[in-house]
Image (cartoon, rainbow, N blue to C red; front, side, top):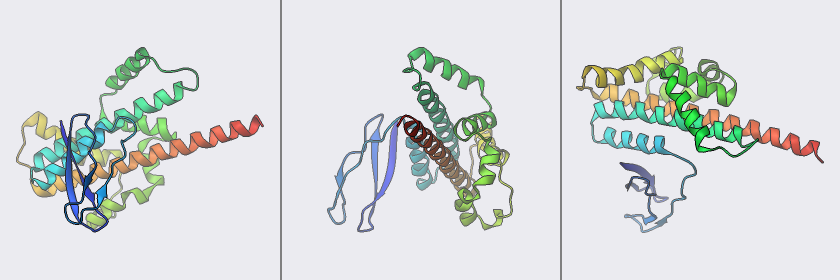
Length: 223
């Protein structure tokens, strides 16, 4: 699989770089000013982000049908990554995870085949709240949608909105063969996926902060 990422040099020049499979983005130079650009190897499995970068590439190529399919798949991959990651982290308080543990988590994930269930499961695992509760407490995460679509400012955003406007549109493509998607739908689905990635990052950050606070409290008790 090829993945693309756009980088901006300090001089303002933008370049699109590509990698194939698990290959990392290579260090390079700005083609405009010659400034060296280095890339730190990402930590963990970022398949979802690589796929989402591909959605961006298809958006620039104006293949709006593929944008919708790839954007939805990217979100699903990132949800699975966070679910697996947090289960590993939680178990490491007791012992190191084994391949059998990972197989068990993967099997559980497959049983939750509805995207709404998966959104709630990951949100609860990371924050202790279901998706809608977490989003209602963090409305600032919706600013990118409101900025691009001012007419949606008064809309009450829930998981059902994202499911209808992103995943149901993807399903109509892959299940019903409706492949003549236009620019507005492609751009909307890409924006919704980008928002979901930001929501998931906020959930993950909140979990990390809670774990840091827990470990700090444990250290204080042992002083």
